[in-house]
Amino acid sequence: MTKQIDTFFVVDFDRCLGNIEGSFDILKEVVHDLGIVDRQIFKSMREEVESNGLTFSALEQITNHYPSVNLDDIEKLYYERARLEPDNLLEPGAINFINFLRKTNRNFCIMSFGDKRWQTIKISSSGIGNVPTAIVRSTKKSEYIQEWLSPISGKFQIPKKFFADNVAKTSNEVVLIDDKISAFKNLPKEARGYYVSVSSSGYGPKQPDPLPMGVKQVVHIDEIITYESER
Image 1 (cartoon, rainbow, N blue to C red):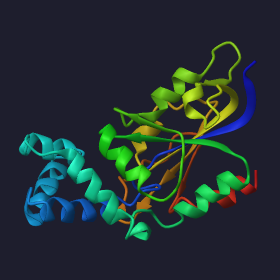
Image 2 (cartoon, rainbow, N blue to C red):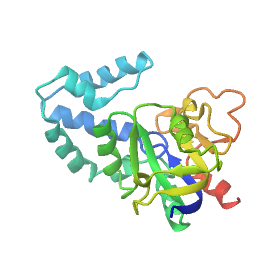
Image 3 (cartoon, rainbow, N blue to C red):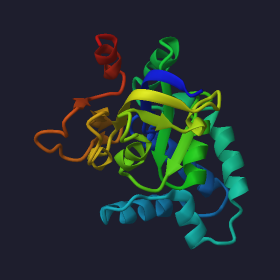
């Protein structure tokens, strides 16, 4: 029998929990010290991609430009450096928010957009511990959430891979937390969300007026603690 829960939180990583500037700074030094590419050239590669409105997928870019590189060497040295700078890999309030979810027995997962290997490296080295994680290839997280919604019961049938105990569960609602407005497009009315508008790298995209129904704006992710405690 599928277990019934009240609420399931789907939490984005980059700019919500993870500090992308901190992780990039470590990677920039790693590829420089391994003699793969100069740190300034690597920084310029990122700026060029992002100036065109695209996401800079770091390891994919390295593989494309330097196909003979062994990514295992990069990953090993990155983990070694990350252990020395754990405070630089998370956004303000990230640990407080994760601790709140755990202490109040709220079910949650990380759903992160991007290259699977690079996202996994960042998440596992961030210091937040073991969290069920899905790496997806679309920024529109609402599409994945829509797939869980049962048209018959109006509840969300969430697969077992999203839970630490590996048991599927039925949830009355889903709460999506993301820094991209596109993530909330066509979010089911049975779900709600929080748009995180500021990260260590600056403000997010210009907010539409108003946000999608059921989505509340916060500056940093730990503001959600107050809102959820009051429910």
